[in-house]
Length: 274
Ligand SMILES: Cc1cc2nc3c(=O)[nH]c(=O)nc-3n(C[C@H](O)[C@H](O)[C@H](O)COP(=O)(O)OP(=O)(O)OC[C@H]3O[C@@H](n4cnc5c(N)ncnc54)[C@H](O)[C@@H]3O)c2cc1C
Ligand code: FES
Image (cartoon, rainbow, N blue to C red; front, top):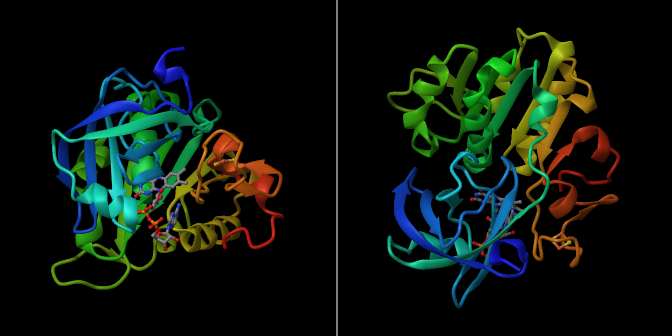
């Protein structure tokens, strides 16, 4: 069995470049020993040798299989170690796992992409997928929020995304900051009075659980049905293949059935947002 087909076998991967996105977020351009095809929203288990594994969703385009980008917020043991790593060092990657975003379902629809903080990383892979075939979608509206201007991830790409025909890009930061002349407020302020064809829309959101909760409530208030909302449920995962049970939510294994879940399928789960 080729390494890429064995879900437990990490593929040796070299770090080609480390890009500092924000003071707490870095993107790692990776070169796996063999190409790893994936769909936007599927995730990888990344091994830092001698330390351990953690799940990350590639932030690069699925059309680029030779190299892969993974964008990482520094938060604990594995991510601390990763942030210290340099070009030329080796990692392991196994996967991809999960189903990925339901891109075909979005054809012909208005697509609302709502991200918070490092949550834009998995969504960037989706954004590239949508923008690459923009004619297939009625409109793509990207709404992104971060705490401060310095914490905006992929800021250098916003202008290009927003300038594409059929794309609307809006950004907000939580609190006023020196030099910031854009919108201020949580990402939900960008969901006020949405000028979209509601019946023909889907929303896809990724960010901290508390953000997902308030985004969902706002979308419902604006008239979205639970069936029209997809949430990236990035809960702790371990095996990635439905064996360990770390990721169970209701009757679903997020690693196999998600991590992007239709809200209608999980809305009755107690304490869904932690
Ligand atoms: C499917 C999936 C995709 C993900 N994609 C990305 C990504 O693209 N970029 C990225 O930066 N992170 C992503 N994450 C989160 C990432 O896996 C965790 O931040 C990482 O595992 C933390 O490992 P650590 O050893 O550095 O932290 P630990 O030392 O294990 O924990 C440090 C702190 O982080 C918290 N934490 C650990 N895991 C998570 C988690 N999954 N969500 C929220 N808090 C957590 C712990 O509760 C603790 O407070 C993803 C998670 C999942 C499940
Ligand atoms: S991560 Fe092991 S069952 Fe989902």
